[in-house]
Length: 185
Image (cartoon, rainbow, N blue to C red):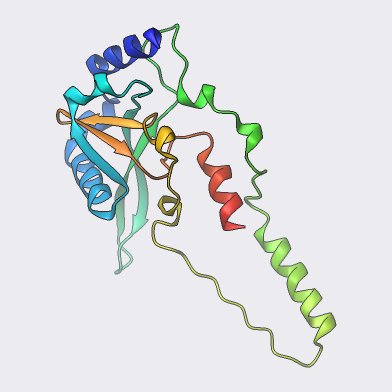
């Protein structure tokens, strides 16, 4: 516990990654949207000492190329939560403390062969029927899964003098992809 308190104090001094410091408007907008959507709650910074199991994660911003509705190339920014980074050498990050073996195996990248197999199976069993399929993207699907309360306390971001307790899966947690894959499958 003492090491965690020291790490949190060091993280408060260090703060966030360089791109989050360069793009504070992106961080503010994303955190504000997370609060409005119920993906995070904001509490005063002085409550950190009362959250005994808390772990701070450093925020970052990643840039992605995308296209506008008119086909114009635009830059999009995504907020990341670095749960691997620690300030002090003796500290363990949330990702290092996570037991990935307790999560289901990830099956990313194997959708097409599974669809083909399903089509072949349906064609075999129903040779004269139409086969209808659709693909859709759920808005913020990854954020639909929420942390257990004690896990949320281990995923706290700091910005603008406030603590942001992340209630949903974050972009930066080792266990988040397999947790999402297990539910989405």
